[in-house]
Image (cartoon, rainbow, N blue to C red; front, side):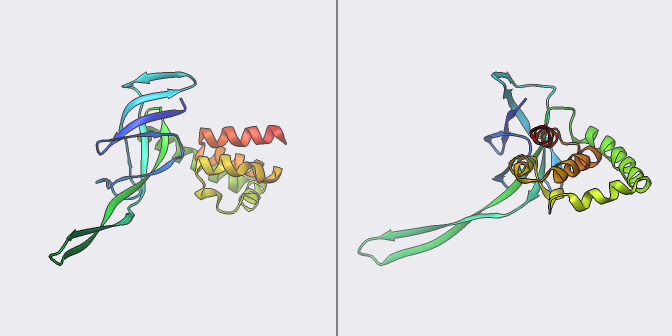
Length: 185
Protein backbone atom coordinates (compact mmCIF):
# COMPACT_ATOMS: atom_id res chain seq x y z
CA UNK A 1 0.00 0.00 0.00
CA UNK A 2 1.20 3.52 -0.57
CA UNK A 3 0.39 5.33 2.70
CA UNK A 4 -0.67 4.85 6.30
CA UNK A 5 -2.25 7.02 8.97
CA UNK A 6 -0.53 6.61 12.33
CA UNK A 7 -1.07 8.14 15.75
CA UNK A 8 1.73 9.55 17.93
CA UNK A 9 1.26 11.69 21.03
CA UNK A 10 -2.47 12.13 20.48
CA UNK A 11 -1.98 13.43 16.93
CA UNK A 12 -2.53 11.71 13.60
CA UNK A 13 -0.06 11.76 10.69
CA UNK A 14 -0.33 10.55 7.10
CA UNK A 15 3.00 8.91 6.22
CA UNK A 16 4.75 7.16 3.32
CA UNK A 17 7.92 5.06 3.19
CA UNK A 18 11.10 7.13 3.33
CA UNK A 19 9.31 10.23 4.61
CA UNK A 20 10.72 12.30 7.49
CA UNK A 21 8.56 14.33 9.85
CA UNK A 22 8.74 16.25 13.11
CA UNK A 23 6.56 15.04 15.99
CA UNK A 24 6.32 15.84 19.70
CA UNK A 25 9.31 14.48 21.66
CA UNK A 26 9.25 10.69 21.98
CA UNK A 27 10.76 8.59 24.76
CA UNK A 28 12.63 6.48 22.16
CA UNK A 29 16.39 7.11 21.88
CA UNK A 30 18.00 8.41 18.69
CA UNK A 31 18.79 5.69 16.18
CA UNK A 32 16.26 3.24 17.65
CA UNK A 33 13.20 1.96 15.79
CA UNK A 34 9.63 1.72 17.05
CA UNK A 35 6.19 0.74 15.76
CA UNK A 36 3.49 3.43 16.13
CA UNK A 37 -0.19 2.53 16.20
CA UNK A 38 -1.66 2.23 12.68
CA UNK A 39 -5.16 3.68 12.27
CA UNK A 40 -5.57 3.21 8.53
CA UNK A 41 -3.72 1.78 5.56
CA UNK A 42 -4.53 3.08 2.09
CA UNK A 43 -3.52 3.54 -1.50
CA UNK A 44 -4.55 2.62 -5.04
CA UNK A 45 -8.16 3.63 -4.30
CA UNK A 46 -8.57 1.08 -1.50
CA UNK A 47 -8.13 1.38 2.25
CA UNK A 48 -8.28 -0.71 5.40
CA UNK A 49 -9.30 0.67 8.78
CA UNK A 50 -7.41 -0.47 11.89
CA UNK A 51 -5.34 -3.23 10.24
CA UNK A 52 -4.08 -5.71 12.83
CA UNK A 53 -1.43 -7.52 10.79
CA UNK A 54 0.30 -4.43 9.36
CA UNK A 55 3.10 -2.62 11.16
CA UNK A 56 4.71 0.71 10.40
CA UNK A 57 8.39 0.86 11.35
CA UNK A 58 9.86 4.27 12.16
CA UNK A 59 13.37 5.31 13.26
CA UNK A 60 14.14 8.32 15.47
CA UNK A 61 16.65 10.41 13.50
CA UNK A 62 17.12 13.39 15.82
CA UNK A 63 15.72 15.48 18.67
CA UNK A 64 15.67 19.15 17.59
CA UNK A 65 13.98 22.10 19.26
CA UNK A 66 11.10 23.85 17.53
CA UNK A 67 11.03 27.48 16.48
CA UNK A 68 11.03 30.07 19.27
CA UNK A 69 7.59 31.41 20.14
CA UNK A 70 7.60 34.84 21.78
CA UNK A 71 4.94 35.51 24.41
CA UNK A 72 4.20 39.01 25.67
CA UNK A 73 1.74 40.15 28.35
CA UNK A 74 0.66 43.76 28.70
CA UNK A 75 -1.80 45.68 30.85
CA UNK A 76 -2.47 49.27 29.87
CA UNK A 77 -1.87 52.23 32.21
CA UNK A 78 -0.18 50.16 34.91
CA UNK A 79 3.28 49.60 33.43
CA UNK A 80 2.90 45.81 33.53
CA UNK A 81 4.88 44.08 30.79
CA UNK A 82 6.25 40.54 30.75
CA UNK A 83 8.04 38.68 27.98
CA UNK A 84 8.79 34.97 27.84
CA UNK A 85 9.60 32.46 25.12
CA UNK A 86 8.94 28.83 24.36
CA UNK A 87 10.64 26.21 22.19
CA UNK A 88 8.88 22.88 21.68
CA UNK A 89 10.93 19.72 22.15
CA UNK A 90 10.52 17.61 19.02
CA UNK A 91 11.68 14.30 17.56
CA UNK A 92 12.46 13.84 13.89
CA UNK A 93 11.42 10.41 12.65
CA UNK A 94 11.88 8.58 9.36
CA UNK A 95 9.35 6.01 8.18
CA UNK A 96 11.36 2.93 7.20
CA UNK A 97 8.62 0.52 6.14
CA UNK A 98 4.88 0.18 5.89
CA UNK A 99 3.55 -3.34 6.06
CA UNK A 100 5.43 -6.58 6.53
CA UNK A 101 6.23 -8.16 9.84
CA UNK A 102 8.26 -5.35 11.38
CA UNK A 103 11.87 -4.29 11.76
CA UNK A 104 13.03 -7.28 13.82
CA UNK A 105 12.22 -9.73 11.04
CA UNK A 106 13.93 -7.55 8.43
CA UNK A 107 17.21 -7.12 10.33
CA UNK A 108 18.26 -10.79 10.21
CA UNK A 109 17.94 -11.29 6.43
CA UNK A 110 19.60 -7.90 5.84
CA UNK A 111 22.61 -8.99 7.92
CA UNK A 112 22.84 -12.26 5.98
CA UNK A 113 22.60 -10.42 2.64
CA UNK A 114 25.26 -7.95 3.79
CA UNK A 115 27.72 -10.70 4.72
CA UNK A 116 27.01 -12.46 1.41
CA UNK A 117 27.57 -9.19 -0.46
CA UNK A 118 30.92 -8.69 1.33
CA UNK A 119 32.06 -12.19 0.35
CA UNK A 120 30.95 -11.55 -3.23
CA UNK A 121 32.78 -8.19 -3.30
CA UNK A 122 36.01 -9.88 -2.27
CA UNK A 123 35.57 -12.63 -4.86
CA UNK A 124 34.90 -10.31 -7.84
CA UNK A 125 36.98 -7.16 -8.37
CA UNK A 126 34.30 -5.57 -10.60
CA UNK A 127 31.99 -5.29 -7.59
CA UNK A 128 34.61 -3.22 -5.74
CA UNK A 129 34.46 -0.52 -8.46
CA UNK A 130 30.69 -0.06 -8.02
CA UNK A 131 30.90 2.23 -4.93
CA UNK A 132 33.11 4.63 -6.94
CA UNK A 133 30.35 4.98 -9.53
CA UNK A 134 27.60 5.63 -6.95
CA UNK A 135 26.36 9.22 -6.64
CA UNK A 136 28.04 11.15 -3.80
CA UNK A 137 26.39 10.46 -0.42
CA UNK A 138 24.18 7.67 -1.81
CA UNK A 139 24.22 5.60 1.38
CA UNK A 140 22.52 8.50 3.25
CA UNK A 141 19.73 8.98 0.67
CA UNK A 142 16.15 8.14 1.61
CA UNK A 143 13.78 6.46 -0.84
CA UNK A 144 12.21 9.85 -1.56
CA UNK A 145 15.65 11.37 -2.31
CA UNK A 146 16.49 8.54 -4.70
CA UNK A 147 13.15 8.86 -6.54
CA UNK A 148 13.70 12.61 -6.91
CA UNK A 149 17.35 12.54 -8.05
CA UNK A 150 17.52 9.37 -10.19
CA UNK A 151 16.50 11.28 -13.34
CA UNK A 152 19.79 13.25 -13.29
CA UNK A 153 22.11 10.25 -12.93
CA UNK A 154 24.09 8.56 -15.70
CA UNK A 155 23.38 4.98 -16.75
CA UNK A 156 26.51 3.80 -14.87
CA UNK A 157 25.37 5.49 -11.67
CA UNK A 158 21.88 3.96 -11.95
CA UNK A 159 23.40 0.50 -12.49
CA UNK A 160 25.76 0.94 -9.51
CA UNK A 161 22.87 2.12 -7.33
CA UNK A 162 20.82 -0.94 -8.35
CA UNK A 163 23.69 -3.24 -7.38
CA UNK A 164 24.09 -1.43 -4.07
CA UNK A 165 20.35 -1.67 -3.27
CA UNK A 166 20.19 -5.38 -4.09
CA UNK A 167 23.31 -6.12 -2.01
CA UNK A 168 22.75 -3.86 1.01
CA UNK A 169 19.47 -2.07 1.58
CA UNK A 170 16.99 -3.84 -0.75
CA UNK A 171 14.41 -1.03 -0.35
CA UNK A 172 11.38 -1.64 -2.56
CA UNK A 173 10.71 2.01 -3.38
CA UNK A 174 14.33 2.68 -4.32
CA UNK A 175 14.54 -0.47 -6.44
CA UNK A 176 11.33 0.49 -8.29
CA UNK A 177 12.60 4.03 -9.04
CA UNK A 178 15.99 2.77 -10.20
CA UNK A 179 14.53 0.03 -12.41
CA UNK A 180 12.08 2.49 -13.97
CA UNK A 181 14.95 4.86 -14.79
CA UNK A 182 17.01 1.98 -16.20
CA UNK A 183 14.14 1.08 -18.56
CA UNK A 184 13.93 4.72 -19.73
CA UNK A 185 17.65 4.72 -20.58
